[in-house]
Length: 496
Image 1 (cartoon, helix red, strand yellow):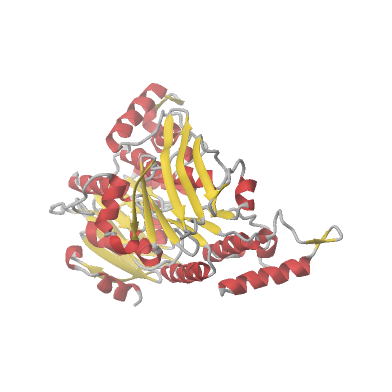
Image 2 (cartoon, rainbow, N blue to C red; image 1 turned 45 degrees about the horizontal axis):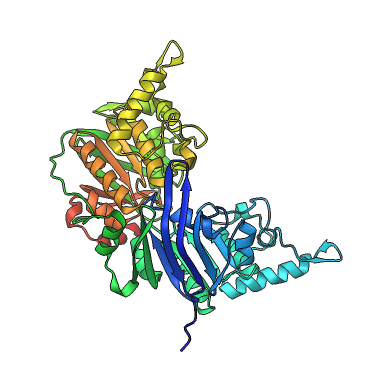
C-alpha cells in the first residue's frame, strides 16, 4: 500500500545567525487542502522558518521537499517556481499601481514584446471571480482597503499557480466582518487543494479555521495536534513552556481620587461630546467596533490632533494641550496603536528610541549624556525582560513583543501619571501579553491612571475595572463593574 507524501515537508531545518540559534532541527509538514496553524511566542522561530520556506534564508541543514521530492530553495525565485507564496503582514504591493499591475508585476502577459493589458485584465477578473469577490481593477492599490489589498496579494499568489500559501498575521488590521470573509476565501482555497500555513496570535481564529496546529518554542517543534485534540490552555502551555493557570493576572485595588478627567471632547463626527474620568489605581477600558472613535479620542487627549471643543484635567486642574509636548509635560503618555509607524523610529537603535521622549532629563547643555542613557535603558531591559543583543540593535530588527517593550520602557522612564495604551497587545504572543498585563496591574497599583483601548473583548473583561463603550464617536454606555460584564453586554452597546 502506497502513501501519498505531504504537499510540503521540512525535516531537521537548522538556521543560525551570529550569536543566535534561530532554528534547531525543526520538522513541519503540510497536506494539500489543509490549514496548518503555526504558533509560537515572538522569537520562537516562526519568521525564520517561513523565510527559509520562502527562499529568503538558506537553511544551514535539513531537507525541504515538495510532493516527496527534495527541493532546495536558494532564492525567492526558487520558492516561487515550486509553488510557494508568502503573504507577509506588511504587504508587498506597489501603492501607485493598480490591482492588475501588481498581480502581474514581474510576470507580465506579453504579445509581440508588448504587455497584453486586456488579457491581464481578463485573467485578473477571473482570479477574483475564483475568490468570489469584486475589486476595482483600475484603482491604485493605495486607495484600496487593507482587506482588499490582502485579496490582491492572494490573487497574485494564484496567478503564478501557488499550491502553498503562507499567511502571516492576516487578520491583524481587519474588522470582524472582513475576517469572516477571509475565512470564507481560505475555505474555498482548501477546496481547490491549496495548502495554507496560517500564523496568528489570535487563538480564537486558530480554532475557527485550522485543521492542525504546530507549535514552535526556542527554535524547536514542541508539539503538533489536530485542532479537535487540543485546548486553548494546552496551546498556551506549549507556547510558553509552563502551565498558565490564569490568562489574566488577578489584582485587588481600591481606586483613589480622579486623576484624569475629560469633558465634552469633540472633533467633527469622529469624536462627539466624549466625557469620562479615570481614578488613581484604575484601569479604564475604551472599546467599540472599528471606527467607533477610540483612537481618535485619545489622540485628542494627547494633543496629536486638534480638538474643536472640550477640556482635559489632570488631578483637578485644566491643562492646555495643543501638542504631544504639552501632554507629556502634563504627565500624560500615549503608547500608539501602530508601534512601527508612530511608536518607534525603526532605523534607529533601541537606545536612541528609548531616549527620544526623555531628552529633557537625559541631556546637559544640548548634549545627550550617553552613559546615563545606557544605564537607564539597561534598567528597563532587565525589568521588562527585553530580548536584545545590545543597545545599539536597530529597533526594526526586534520581534513585535520586544518592540512593544521598548515603547513601554521609554514612557515608563518619564514616570507619567496618566498612561494610555492603544491596543497594547496587538500582534504579541500570549507569554509577552501576560507580562504586559502584569505591568498594567503594577502601574495601577502605583497610583497611575491607566486607559486601555482594546478590540479583544476577553482582554477588556479580564483586565479592566470599568468599561466605556463608544459607537460612531459617542459614548453609548459605561459598565461600572467589568468583572461581572459579558461580551454580549459590550456588543449591544457597541452597535447601539
